Image 1 (cartoon, rainbow, N blue to C red):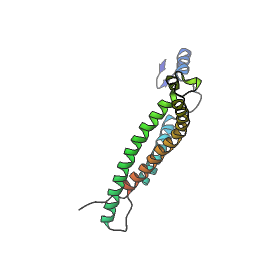
Image 2 (image 1 turned 120 degrees about the vertical axis):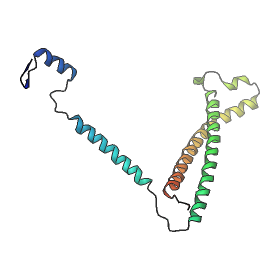
Image 3 (image 1 turned 45 degrees about the vertical axis):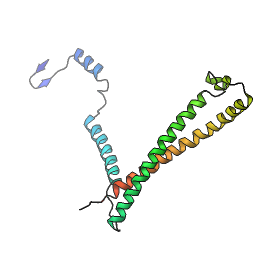
Length: 161
């Protein structure tokens, strides 16, 4: 019921309003919460931008160009080695899935009757578990080094005239 400039809410309207917005008793200002979240994202963005801000160098541009070339070659070699390590990791996981444990379903060892092949497979399954840890560590290490190299390339840029 609207009378003049004042708005009067009936009981049925109040019940509907309180069921749609159950926290009407709380004085929540969504605009301030939104501004707070935006300020957090701005500060995170400014922090990241400061990391990638170009750095001044005190040595010749030719040396910087050679560093860029060397780092690019190193990144290429690391990417190729990560691909090979990933395929080796996937192969080892496949072997581990068919290991001679009772939890893994079919066993690859049951396909062979020769005791030397079975002994080799038993040793190989134990080595695969160690390899999985080493390969996963190397993959993460190479990704870390690639990130460090890319940060160097981004921050130490040069303009060729």
